[in-house]
Image 1 (tube, one colour):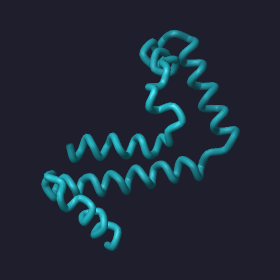
Image 2 (cartoon, rainbow, N blue to C red):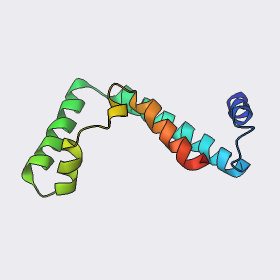
Image 3 (cartoon, helix red, strand yellow):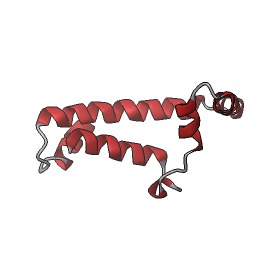
Image 4 (tube, rainbow, N blue to C red):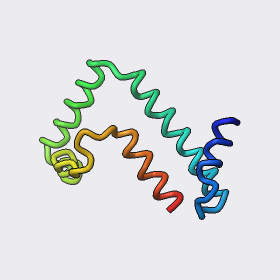
Length: 97
C-alpha cells in the first residue's frame, strides 16, 4: 500500500484520471514482475537457444517482418539504454499521456 500511495503522490498533479493512474500502477507492477522473472530464468544456454531460433527464423525467409525487425538498427536513443527503463517510460507515457 505504501508503494501505491507513493505512486499516486508522485502523479498527484498529473491531469490523467485516477482510473488511468491505477491502470498504470497495475501495468507497472506486471511489467516489473515479468522483467524480474525473465532475468531470474535466463541462463546462457536458454539465451543461446532463443538467439539461434531467431536467427533461423530470420534466415529462412518465411517471416519477412520478423527478419526486418531483427536486422533493423536500434533508434539512437536506445543505444546503451536500459531496456526496462525505456519500456516503462513509453508505457507510462502512453497510458497517462
